[in-house]
Image (cartoon, rainbow, N blue to C red):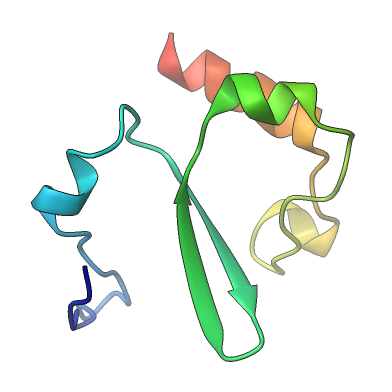
Length: 81
């Protein structure tokens, strides 16, 4: 499915409901690949099984230090409880 989404004044976009219903999660990973943003559903069980790596490195998040995958999983599990 391809769609055009407009950003809000706060820079947010809405994922189409038809697309969101295909996944059993409300959390998604957004990865920048050159000039493309890739959006994937976050599957915690698969993420835990993978080797430790940096998930994101944004200046506003975690002071630009990045975050290890296992630390992100812990945070997301606390949020989901």
